[in-house]
Amino acid sequence: MANPGAVITGGHFRIDMGKSFHNKRILGDGKTWSGLIGGTFVGMLSGIIIFYIANTMHIPYGNYSSNLLGSLYVLFIMSFGSLFGDIVGSFIKRRIGLKSGASGSVLDQWPFVVISFIFLFLFARTFFIRFYGDIIPIIVLLIITPPIHRGVNMLAYKLKMKDVPW
Ligand code: CTP
Ligand code: MG
Image (cartoon, rainbow, N blue to C red; front, side):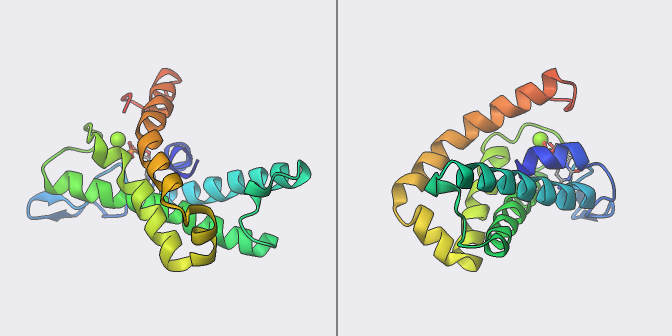
């Protein structure tokens, strides 16, 4: 939810401030502070809604932590990590010469999941081990994220929220 949140809130205050590195944009016009901050906020808000729904329905999977503050912390790490990963993907796309908005295939679909996992491992290890301690959910997420990412972007394209369906 953090990444679609960035599409809605994004577009203002470029993170690379328009600067280039070896004649190629550092990140490009598609990575902005408003998207990074707004997307983190949308990601956390979605997580809190899931947390409350799961709690009222007594579904254990919604418990990111034993309390709301702990959950907010985990949600921040997860959402920010995901958007940071999206920025890393963009950085790699620019280095290999792809223009902003060009289809980067796995570079659009994997860095954000992988880096979100790394952030959780580094900064929210109790949660990480509890939810992803077994390698299976990680593998499942690595497999299902690209088609979900593609599906959400195709929907955003149809709704005219994005210029391209990837
Ligand atoms: N967006 C943003 N800030 C971010 C991430 C996304 O403003 N940190 C917004 C931008 O308006 C961007 C849109 O969300 O154009 C879609 O995001 P994405 O497809 O990830 O970016 P691209 O424009 O494709 O750029 P890149 O090629 O660098 O991935
Ligand atoms: Mg893109």
